[in-house]
Amino acid sequence: MEVKIGVQHSPRELVVETDESAEGVERLVSDAVQADGVLALTDSKGRKVIVPAGKIAYIEIGGGVSGAVGFRS
Image (cartoon, rainbow, N blue to C red):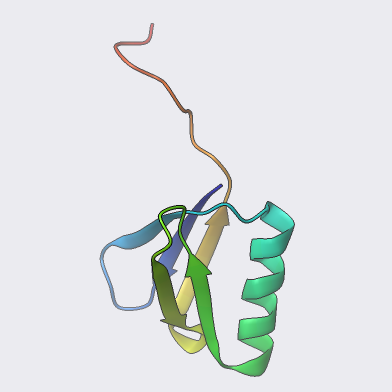
């Protein structure tokens, strides 16, 4: 599952590929925002990404188009 995290005052977004389900990621985000804590996600390689909930601008949950190569008409 691909998760894109927009961080306030940052021109780039964080992209995390995780093994969590969409519902699991949504629950983690909701809990972090309600508690004004941190959002902690573990990517598919076992690395942790931690973002303060107060600095999150947006979250996009979903997969991109995998395996797309070449030109489209």
